[in-house]
Length: 411
Image (tube, rainbow, N blue to C red; front, top):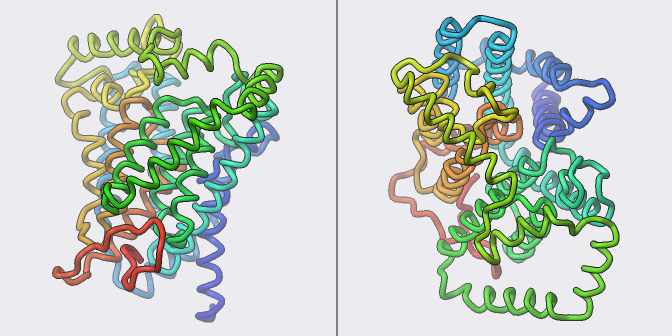
């Protein structure tokens, strides 16, 4: 294949992957009979020529993330034999194998800087799409979601929708023109609010707080004050009253939503969802205490007796499944992604770490959700591509407005 055509094919693979997997279109099509497995198989077939081309035309460098994936698979298979080795445990192992294969495919398509930048630009478009769908569903409840008043867009649940927006913000923020960065931050916030996902809102505030700190809090203080004043003015204006009445009539403002809002206004955490999560977390901790060394086996945290849900906490899930060994799984992933990070990638790696550490306390699906795996592969590839940056280079402060910096903080 000629060089120009090969470059176009690489770009096509990136566009395909982000469009199908980061937006969660692959899961959404399940209702039409096109299950995620079919999409992953198609992705694998399309990526095979690229993998073969790389194997025979260049020196292969094994990224740390690949080593982590192999270790995680080894642990998952070994601990399968501590279970009853039934269909449920087998399904969990199979799911982990598929997730790690998908991660490896992601590493393959993002191996060059050009594809990395295309990937980040596509993620930005995915963020805008998710925001638009969430806003639409706010006024047309149950279009995508099964929970009245909470938007999911193409994602499986509201928490995934909010998490994908935050992760997308981290990856795409630096490819947005500086004069539009503040508007982009606001757009993502508007997209997260209709999910009423408290965990996503907390993650968003932490990430945006980092961005503001990097640009100088005093410099941005005026903008922050203006934003807060605008929000307060909207809430107390006739426009808000009309909007509130419209949302109540459509069923978008209900008891569940109001209880979640009270978490931020009154610190209230006594709703049914919070109570259930505390109960299952307490039981998971007891199970770890019963078998702290070897755990209960792969997938045990997914079927805790007396509960229909998982731990909602990846750290507890790994402890229940793998005992002490489970402590190293998530930190190992994060270390593998940022291995070799330098000043050029600091404004990607730190927000990523903040998000992943926080999200691990709210989700036990951290290691299998494809938008997270694809984002991790993209970030790990960016870090690898920038390892050779001169040690004396300093990372420029982010500018939310004004002229473009002479040196981009990331490729």
